[in-house]
Length: 441
Image (cartoon, rainbow, N blue to C red; front, top):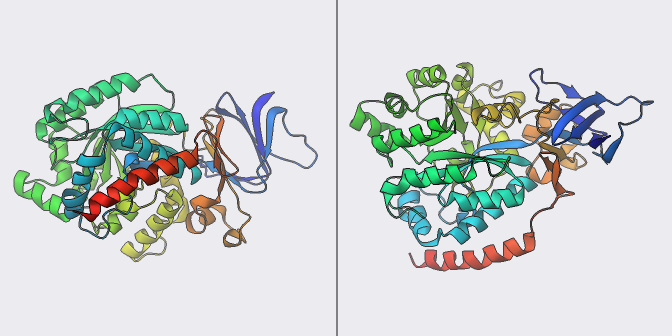
């Protein structure tokens, strides 16, 4: 007898062959995928403690968000329609200085976890301050995550003395290295224009010494690109390489302003990229050369960025945007096809954040991070090509059930582990204070 059997479904495996199995049966045992079969009319279902009818919907790997800032859901819509530097310096940094407390970080992270889970994301890669409290929220919600303590060379929430930034990151990693099987600690440097060469190298060495992922915003705007060229006579990517930052455990976030040499350098070092098209568009930062990166063999995963610069964390919307932006940028309707973009939200995303051995596809031996997408809706009817439907027609609200590590965290569109009414009321009260403060700025 196994733990759980799913049946009456179209299975999108996202395995290396791209197999799609009609009328599939999926068995889960001890948090892992134990069997995948095709149901024949006369064959009984495997004996299991729980048997779940997927209702003819799609069973697929949980989506993986390779870049977000979970607590920033409290700043959703606070400062829209502004250039990046104005948005940061005049609005976000002041708001963080006043309202980013351990309690608010935990609350905002819980709100984001709920949004992610209800829209089919089972794993995220996060970077922020007070990351210990982010980790507590993630652990409580049942999400899987790579979590990076923020490092920046100025006073920051929880780190009034910037000289303590590496020590704080080290303490976070020590605390969470073996605390939860669903949480991998990481180091998150904000950007090369907010971190000195000394800080960048020290943070990279910390991550390298613990075999952890190193995350950094890079080449996000033309202004950053020009600044690096003026100060260091190198592109931002070349500057990081000159400091010994780039390797297979480096995640470069945004990576918009790249030339051919930068792309070759990223590919040569094995670094990965998180592509955040909606945030890039909203801040008018530019369009990343994703097709060129993929052709060079660079692992590229999709991310939403935080809610302050995207306003939602729905990875289905992010896939749709990534595909269409890639086509209009290249003027090629064949660019960024549905299968490619779906891989960027599953298998390739897992590879980008170093978890490809465990998640990103539904295959025997991998962890059971699974979502069920309800296809009984007008906007999902008819369904000729499931992968196309997922990218171009579906949305996060179509997710019915979510399983992480073999345990249900969402059943029939309700989160099992969280009291949503309580969370939403606490958010409403706190954000009224943020609104009052913002109105007087």
